[in-house]
Length: 273
Image (tube, rainbow, N blue to C red):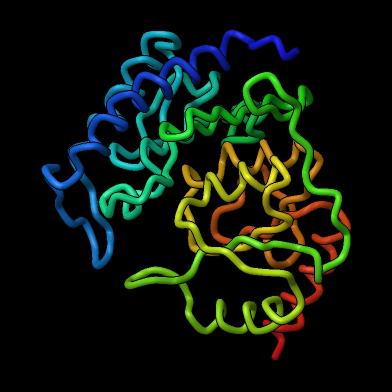
């Protein structure tokens, strides 16, 4: 049975507190105040309240840590201390359309040794308020769903693999790039799914529900926790060139070792065409 560290307890408490409010708001979604911040970007009162709830909880627990937040942006803290990376509502469009598939994502990013920027992600929590599932990981301690250990799928053949992705939409993403990749991967695999919340795609990959995932044009708060959880579940995460960084958001390709290699080969050949 997993023993939760202090930082995971803090993250889970914040996520659950914000998640309780999101569940209530989801039941009254038609009454929410919604505004637009871009061509297809919506922000609701629920986003703002969830982010504020998480911020208050985390600030109380670690008052000298900084933040990277979807709505509030960067809030500087002690540069020698870690910072929080927070997405208060990943899957906003699902939420606003009454689709019960969205999540809260919180990660801890460590400062680089010697200063000068940010390094590894050391802890991550992804919480689904509707299913009450908490996916979490700490560096070198494995990935977990509640107190059950997570492992990526053992499938090694593309025809058996179920792959998740994010499809470009109004104002976001590269349709040409995505079409080339889908054209190469789609015919080779058992299925491709687009559920609309990248954090949950990565959490489900770590849990073996998906066998692979690709997307581009995301943000750090979409993927910071998920990248760590996949890696701690035994998976591989890279950009489209195969390079590995602590957080992948501009380009993400994730799978187990065998499928990552096969998917990467298909993807690279597709983008050469």
